[in-house]
Amino acid sequence: MYSVLLFCIFAYIVFYHGGKSASYLVDVPRLIGDRLGKLWEIAHHGMRENRLLRAEKALLTILKIDEKNAAAYNRLGILYAKQREYRDAIDCFEIASSIEPSASSLHNLGLIYYETENYPKAATAFEQALRLEDNLAARHIAYAKVQEKLGNDKLMLHELETAAKIEPTPESYNLLLSAYESRGMNDEATKVRKRINRIADSTGQPKRLVRPRRVVI
Image 1 (tube, rainbow, N blue to C red):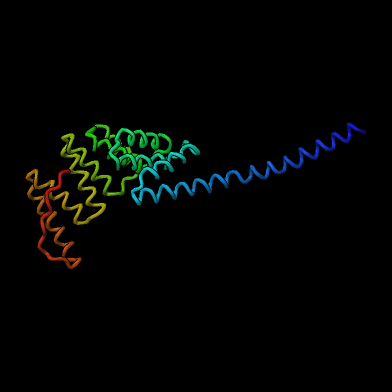
Image 2 (cartoon, rainbow, N blue to C red; image 1 turned 90 degrees about the vertical axis):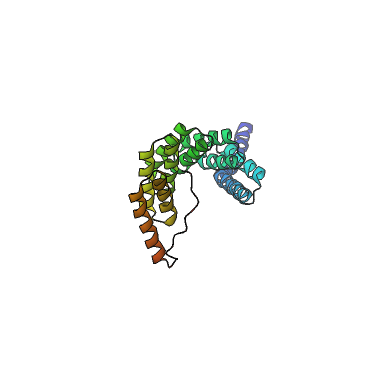
């Protein structure tokens, strides 16, 4: 009789506390999700308000909870880049790319390599980004800048021409115009000027083109 009573008490304890534990485990993902959401909000506001230390702490805490969060590594890389901590920025972008390759993280990696004058690695990163997403003019322009540094004029001009086709804006055309003029490609430059003038006419801007300062690309 005594052993039966002990068994009943034990069964009650297991059932009662086991039920509470199960309920708690169900809530754990929601609690973690809520905490991550708050940390992302802190990081976002910190970056926007230039409170970089606060943003960094939030991002590092996110990575303690979710060590394979590519978005957090990418955002942390941007934060370090803003502070010119390029080595740390490169590490973050490389980790983000290894976890979840994306055009944005690879493009950011290329920008840092370009900034630190590591042009071969910058070219590789931009090429990888373009393989994932090649419909943005900015990616082609960035790749063109690297190719000029590497002395590949033909490829550089091709990328600027591609950028102008994707986004036929005065900005992209002016970059192409500057490249043509600096290389004595007068016929090509004349054609681009006409396109810029047509854009000016269609938007009601003065026909006379104000020459932009020379952009080093």
